[in-house]
Amino acid sequence: MSGRDLEQRLLRKFVAALILVPLGIVIIAFAVANRQAVTLSFDPFNARSPAAELTLPLFVVVFTVLIAGVIVGGLAVRLGHGRWRRMARRFEREAGELRARLDALVDKAAEPSIVPREQEPPPRLRLRPPAR
Image (spheres, rainbow, N blue to C red):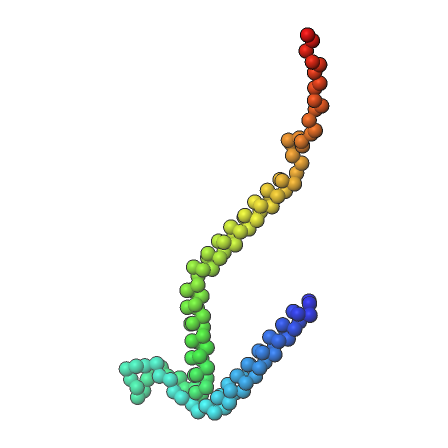
């Protein structure tokens, strides 16, 4: 590993720590400040005594909804980029085939040729002048 790669890795780790440590502190502060229990009702027709309800701390509800949103958004992006991924795979496959064909042509060009190389022309004929 070169010195430049090591410097880039250290810089990435430093930037990640610079972002993640304050974010972690904010998340912990939010969780501590919002510990009160909330009731989630899954029955839109009977608000007084719902058939399905769940009582959880508020921060658990918020984090669960946040994580679910990230997962749904990631799936939407992944499905939306499917066409581009298919095209990229096709282009990579075609590039590999073309590289193989090029290598075969280069190898073939490096082989000795059947056609003889140019030789020096034969010596010129010397004719005597015609007799008179």
